[in-house]
Length: 442
Ligand code: SF4
Image (cartoon, rainbow, N blue to C red; front, side, top):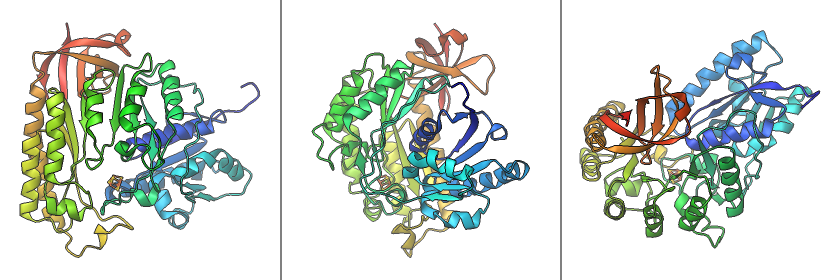
């Protein structure tokens, strides 16, 4: 890299794992002209990778970008860009709202970042990259970065979505579903594993429909098996699964064991058939429970997690009770629960029977309280047992402690030396907490 000036890149990432993956891609696209730095103060280029899935997430973005404005006032050469779903959704309007921005780019615009930054540096900004091409393919870039490789990484196997759940903005901001060719995926996972990554999560809005639309001969279950056979890969996860497309062969692949993890994240969203229909989810409470029963049958110790929306338009007390009873029936290890918030472009935002904010908040509290007791009960099954833990690093909130993860994705905290980081070790669980396990070395 002799003679080349490297400048600092700071990326603030909001939202889901898909955005985390995209932020890594931004680093790759911009390397070696820019290398990641730890704080915005050290950066020559700041990118904010946004999420518009919920209104609250969108507000956080605006307040953070506003804070970066002060840095630009001190250093006018600083380039600030906003990417991700809010950028795709708002496009040029963002430049009106935040006139100090140099760059607005959607998820497909990531691959034009190098050129766009050059243009801005040559005085041709601001630039907007939000055009969406149907059938857009993720280019197979994978540059070796100077930063140490993490223990865990994400690999996108498909992007976009064709499902149009009536509450969801994803099909509008990420476009239609496109699966990546299997060889690109295998190559990317292989390169990551060679560089030291041990735990890979395959990502997509609906991984179970992998390849169907493009007529690939490889199903998602077959892809899972092929990725699982890569030497050196310790753990393999996937998200997100859609109950309407979830097939038995995926359960069979999971039952074959490591490196495929003993964890299934299967968003249910509501326990009421009436609400599921209004959400356009295309499965019923009964068909969802049938999948869960099969999974539990083949994987008795499986860790189950889900997403729940409360206060969807028209949700009555009865509908809400159906959600509570489903949580009790399944007994998830963990849930991610949200209050419904109307999103631009979506059908549900137009429904006349929006639920009162106060009612939504009460329902959310009820769901959280119920899950606290279920989750604790579920995690208690590990007390006194030995679990296999992949050690990920130091616990940032407790000195002297390490943090790792079980195959079921449970976080485990314990005291131990740095040499264990990156290793898979057996630990004795002493106590279950709400969201984690406390353990000791044997
Ligand atoms: S499946 Fe539904 S919730 Fe998931 S991304 Fe697609 S439209 Fe959104």
